[in-house]
Image (cartoon, rainbow, N blue to C red; front, side, top):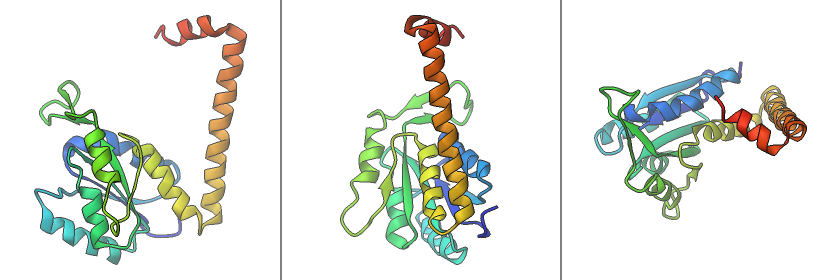
Length: 190
């Protein structure tokens, strides 16, 4: 377990972002890193947003991962209140709360609105943005930040990268053996 109590905060603008942001939590869990997860709307709960930045500093968070769709002001607003590094996750897919399995609706601009809103912060309010719906990458980036000061975590991260390498090599070997067309047909048959 990472030696800090809860080093990472995961926040999102609404319940509809959960299906994307849960992937960050799953990665952190696989590295045994605790995280504090909350819903905070930059537009609907601005006083809670201000409270959260004080809370995050009191809890000594090392990184905040903030997912938001549409105008996506949450990551930038959080960053404007704190010196804690913020990783923004632009959200493309939204769900209506009545039935999260079937009623998908998508950002009007394919998530580009969120990506640009997060990545184009004015000078002086720095955040980093990952790709659209890439909360997994946000979690891995947060782990890299923590690993700078933790040799055990750095080793786990190197092991993770090694496993990724081995998966690609296994897939390549299998594709070469089967041939590209057969590999494609077999991979798309399920």
